[in-house]
Length: 325
Image 1 (tube, rainbow, N blue to C red):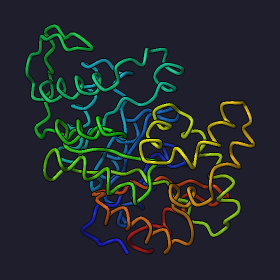
Image 2 (image 1 turned 90 degrees about the horizontal axis):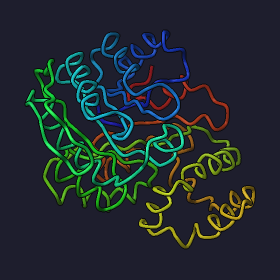
Image 3 (image 1 turned 60 degrees about the horizontal axis):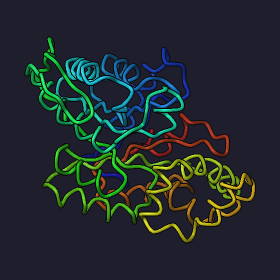
Image 4 (image 1 turned 90 degrees about the vertical axis):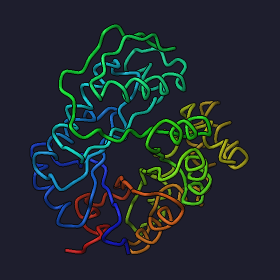
């Protein structure tokens, strides 16, 4: 059971209409959730749901997981972060990252080049820009000439970096306030957390944890493999899982996928890997599994409900809550 003083987050928005989320947010508070974390891929943008939460449920801590550094210019990124920090003083966490070539290049038409340097430069720029400093400087991946933020937040938001492999994890620990991680097992967290914390003490580690509270095992395995394949074959995640030591168990999957045999590729994802990367089972079993992430070093689990067996997402949110209604 998750302790009351622990952070316990939910990925938003839920499938409900955005204009119905006042009820969603109020229920999250009643259920004991402490955080809501947005994303930015092909659903809503990363800020609108948080702005609604700031107005409708000010008790919740708000976080972006993540805003891609490539798809907003540096000045706009600073403005976006400052606006949210002003809307929720002391209660907003800015999570940024490089995202992936799929989102950046294929969907937004922006070259996905030098992701490490882009992340580093963006963090360094934001650290200064959010204080109201006037900045004129040539960074390695962009140049700023005379930008000064007009509305400076009273409370500086923590900046977290989405990180997969060692270089980004070290950067998150060294120059950000912590890291955002996802698509990894509870056992993987031990290695990841150590790298981040070796760079600096008291770093936050937010994990987006994919959860399907269902005991329909065969359906979970089949649908879970389909969902996992969408990530495992994105270059940055493929490299991540090779780095984690999964090259041997996933080599046949990647071979079939690269040859165009999608059905065969799915069959080559081991069942045990679904259970490691997608928390599933009864709600109590799911809570116990989520707690393993916390014990491994995660400071805030941000649950992402996967209705793989057609279950009602709102009911799953209730079933997984720290406080039962």
